[in-house]
Length: 330
Image (cartoon, one colour):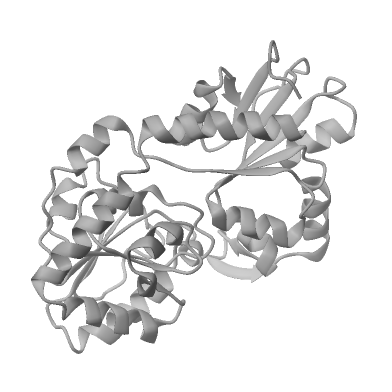
């Protein structure tokens, strides 16, 4: 499909700043998915929630020949693969209803293309349907943010760990594994601390000395400066920007195999990509804590070098290239 003179509409549901920047880079008009959808656009890009629009197209309510592209940057592809979902009302993981899953996959096949934020999403998509045209794009850190982060010198020789992410889905963010890991390590390292930055109202009353819920913070620089390690044990967390922020602040990252930024961590230390097993995670953290400061500084430098590749200018340029390639296949 040729892009010249094509009208593009980006329909946001979460409105992530990176995704909005993607839309602006290709000249798309931006509006909320919750509003009445115009029918006269050539290309529609949905942010995660593809089902409402694909139903409209299936019913013939969109312009003939219009194309729908979905941007996947949330755990729904992971949950479709695992046949589970997080029930916010009951605060627990449940089996994905069979009919709902069948409907979700049926409508997924009605998409004309998919933009996958990270390789993890693309791999999960291919498990469900290999025929849908797809391209991998990447989240990034804004230029101003990057300038602030690279000035940080973390305290690599302490035993303070940072995690950044919000709820209520603790399963998606792997908070349960992090808590179990902390309990194991606390016996050996009495001074260990884990600071949780983000909104966790549903479980923030957890009474564990050293495991601290700090809430939402406008400025996380002071937490990054006082941390020696980030641990992110997500399940289907596609490409968390917080992990790239930590890298650019010179903080090494231990990450789960089910977190998208594993592809960055793999380039620095493959063994820092771990299974979702508290014993394995605690062993790796222990190993890191016991490294000489000189080795930690080498790791810090390597993580910075990889993290800085995910800057605004380069990732927006890549997005425009990949979007054009995707449209050429549709």
